[in-house]
Image (cartoon, rainbow, N blue to C red):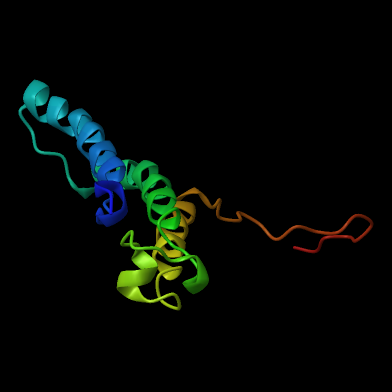
Length: 113
């Protein structure tokens, strides 16, 4: 069995991205000598979540496709594992959803105040 087949799944790329993205708040603290609030992490999490979704989704397999390589579907079960990338995608997309400002009125309908 090769080392690649026995390797455990990791979110190495996702963790590395989070570390690289943490450089911006670190610069902010160093330059302004002020620790930012939670608002600084919201856009960083919005960038990180799709990458984490991709990383976890590529390590999920159908039961018939499982090998000796340890995957999230092997560790969590094939019924639970797909919810992990779905959670990341949902958390990233909620921040980007525009909120409606007014109810649209169909063409030809007179709007009353």
